[in-house]
Image (cartoon, rainbow, N blue to C red):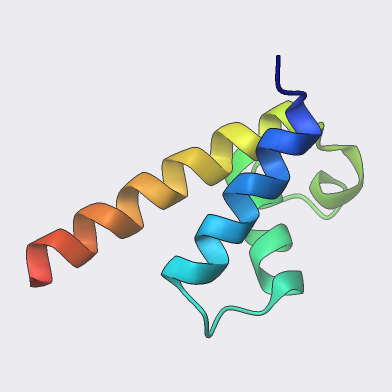
Length: 70
């Protein structure tokens, strides 16, 4: 069984491939905001499974956007 952290790291790698111009700090901040809302403490308080769920949603959106363009 894959841990939340392993899943999150896999998704971060996929997001990085899908949007290579997005810096890692930006990506993590965006994921925390997607998971917890626009609160400064979101980056600190967010759990790996919350970040993984947000990353999965964002990756789906990016793939849909790229498919619509193609």
